[in-house]
Structure formats: structure tokens, C-alpha cells
Length: 209
Image: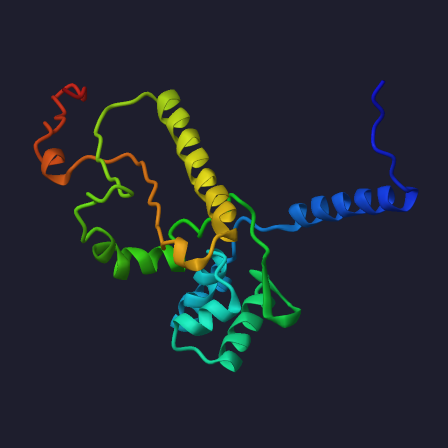
């Protein structure tokens, strides 16, 4: 006969308390920043850099060693991110993210606009032919139901990216590379094609033809 491992009552209560705290923390994680919070981050290049480093689980010492940011300056930047509710700055300059796995920048928000205006061309200045790179453009005509199903799958891929990012955080920085996943789908027709569409005309009876 097998018996479960006996635990002291105190240890069991501690385990339950730890689980409760973890669930409470998960509930308080954010999936979006406000427009004002994003604007504050993107308006300061160093603050933006530190925010992205934190998002990618790059620690305090690694940030200072990699970028031209002094230790006091990095602490100040992390403190600003703490006030914004993006991270929690812990003792010994440890960083705890306060964002959920489905976190994303605001649609058409300050950071997305920054990407569209300044980083878009830089991002696509590549052949995407490395083993760990991929890009494909697919055109088609889908029903609303099929479009909705595809959007759900793309959201799942974005979440998987976040999960893998968290999972790989335990690896040394030298074994990780900065990666950006762009997921997009929209109603769109090339302007050159749209110009060739037949224009609907109205006949004398008022009916369109």
C-alpha cells in the first residue's frame, strides 16, 4: 500500500499560501498600458530600451554591461517603470514583470506608431532566409467565420511566443537572441487593384448597375 508523503501542518499551510499569492499576482497582471504610459516610455529612448530589456527578462547587471547606461541611471529608469506599473523593482535591483502572457502594445498606440514610422522599414530590411527566420505573404478571400478563426489562432501563436520567452529566461544571455514576431491580418486590397474595380453607376430609375 502506498501512502502520500506526510507534511507538517505548517508547511502545508505555507504551500497553500504560496499558491494563493501566485493566483493573486496573476490576477493583478496587466495586458495593456494606457496611452499616456506608452507615450512616456517611447518618448525616452533609454527608458524604452530598459522596458524592452525587462520584457525580455534581461537583468539589471546585463543591461548595464551591454548598454551605455550607468548603474544609477538604470536604477532611475527602472524606478520609473515601477511607478508606471510595468515592473516591480525588488531589492538588489531584481526585476519582476507585472504583465500577463497576452500583454501587447496598444493598437495604433504610441509604441505601435513608433514602429510604423521609424522601425517598419528597418524590420523588413531582411531576406528572412536564416534558419530561425520566416516571412510569408498570403492573399485570399475568407468568410467572417474563417477570418475570426484565423485571428484566434494568431493570438494563440503570440501567446506561445510570450510563453517561450518566459521559459528561455533561465538561459544565459549569450544563448538568447533578440527576436521580434510580427503578427498581422487585415481587410486589404492593393491600391493598384482597387483602382481597377468597376465603378457602380446609377441608371435613370435610381437603381445601381
